[in-house]
Image 1: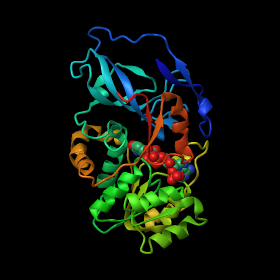
Image 2: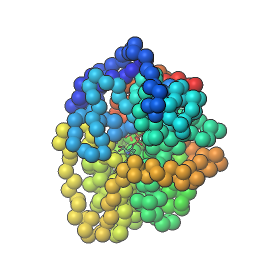
Image 3: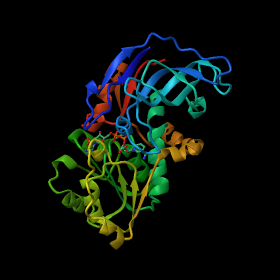
Image 4: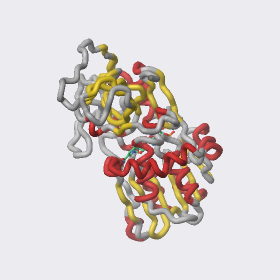
Length: 337
Ligand code: NDP
């Protein structure tokens, strides 16, 4: 069983050498009556929160990875052995698994059984999985959108951002996104149908860039980045604007997170900032699929994935999230069937 192991807890930016590949010779077994399953991992998801789990923390949402053990994350797999009545051999599932070829899952009730296979299986790491639910809950619920409103999304071409932008366009909003390369800006404008987009790495003054894109201000900010971007956005929010605080990737590798200076704007402009934790919405997965699966099938929403081949390329794919190397949802293929 080939595995990706965390070497040590990480300080600062993660490196490929913080992880290593190991072949474990212990054969996995499900005990009779144990309720456990073994899955063969097919697609693994690289997600920014995984960096947070590489450092010890006292956050009830996350437990830190154990140095010397395989990394865990969301993935798609096929059941190869089951003592759990709800799943049988051959079933496809998505949920939290190990970064390895085969994983023994002792709590298979946390897995979602995949019912619809007329779409790409890898989509269950993205548009039809955890990032999709994040975009759906974050936009429709937390952002409380109204038609015609001005929406801004940071890290807009990524797993979550590209969906928020397309949901907002379908809803009838004016949508602007930012990202870190020319290629990503092209995608935002030409593939995802954003009204406008800018490369934040080429802007000396983020406040000025936002004023240029939103002369009348921002109603909704979908926050993926934090730090200086959040500070500039606060200066450009309109009265009664909403900020969905989804993530702050610019802060995950910092020992001391940056301060935000323009918070008084929350008072002046009666802004509502609300955090989002996607796990809260997992019980609503069926409701989410009812909305998003038709979008996929009818081609109303497109989804760009960045595919890395093989477990041996998983560490590089994961750390690439923090330099913006990924173009779209970063997936690792372990096996195709
Ligand atoms: P992405 O696919 O968007 O990948 C991360 C991207 O972030 C990179 O490609 C890069 O793009 C950008 N980025 C990296 N470092 C920085 C930086 N210092 N400043 C600005 N941008 C940076 O990731 P996801 O869509 O999976 O996640 C987006 C956000 O959503 C993250 O903050 C994540 O933690 C959060 N999230 C939160 C969830 C929740 O339940 N609250 C669930 C899922 C995700 P670029 O080229 O644009 O720099």
